[in-house]
Image (cartoon, rainbow, N blue to C red):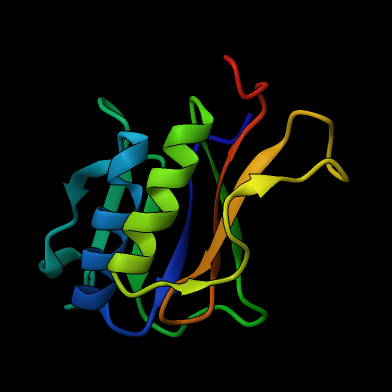
Length: 130
């Protein structure tokens, strides 16, 4: 089981706004901010569904190749809401919400690129009527 993961971003404040807005429909919010006196002056935030941060955003040089992170959604509506929120927050479409039967019969997902090119996904593994 993965405990936490994260991405490095070139513009901390811009990334914070994006991730706070994009992940809000999935129940994510900033749960921890590491004081800059411990980070060398850069932004480090932990987002998650309370009570624990499991996705960290670190201001620095973005990873190359870019990272793909998929967030689990409770239902198809949450995937749709993630996609709309991510686009409104400045994300770039990388695959609109819809079935992905090549992954498995009930896979429903949406993909956006953040400002640094990281592929951010929300996915649901349940049938549409659940």
